[in-house]
Length: 304
Ligand code: NAP
Image 1: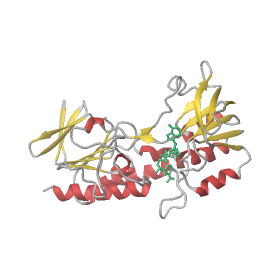
Image 2: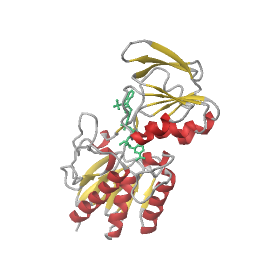
Image 3: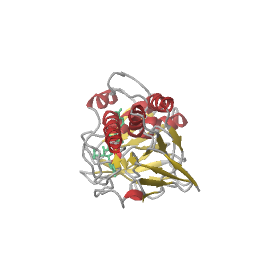
């Protein structure tokens, strides 16, 4: 197995991880970013970002690609490998991927979060057969069709708006009558004639044989159920972290987030954390970028 030495290993090439790379590179450090999937993290699927300061509109893909190119230009080395574990080594840490052992003085965990499933029967079976977690990736398959979006956060609202521009009808199903996402986006959806809000409702069953043909939703107040015929269901009920591989080194809260404050310190020397994977109240692009800067500065300060 290959062994490689660097100053800083960043696990996760989302907004937090790539921002950390930019700061560490500008501080003169060598940086390797390990990414299990593709650069960009969750934001890469956002159709239109409207709340990043200084950018009235930018697609998630363009935003993530600009960050990627900026980090590359500064000298970041991106390796598309999953970090499996961390070990203590003389003078620092080792991050193991199965392909390579990366020796470094410091590690930043910027692992982000992955889509939360509904946990219903047939959900896994219907992925790619009517179930999607990404409206911008799969929306075009549902042009002129009827779809439902489940969720009440910014992702669900943005997905519903994007799909309303493509589909004949969009049901927006949310378990409460107040949305977690921005009111401005809710208001935009209220104005759309092809969007129907189904509130105080949960999806309790997925219908169909080889692909989804409908859903059963249950009204939380009346307990009544109703069937809605749909061609596609877009699930946008938030994210869950995936930090178990590092639980020997960092404390995880009851939901699996890495316990850390605004200083991005984990309590373990040489291991920092940044972005959505850590305990925090506001998970936004701006706070992910801020974490990246803070974690990189802390990691660089520790290095000789
Ligand atoms: P989120 O804000 O955590 O919202 C998840 C939504 O799903 C909530 O409305 C929640 O309901 C609902 N939910 C959770 N578990 C559920 C379940 N088992 N069944 C049914 N509904 C369930 O997630 P998100 O929308 O993916 O956003 C994640 C973060 O990224 C947020 O901080 C968001 O603001 C940010 N984001 C930002 C942008 C942007 O800046 N342009 C775009 C997208 C996302 P309750 O409200 O009842 O808890």
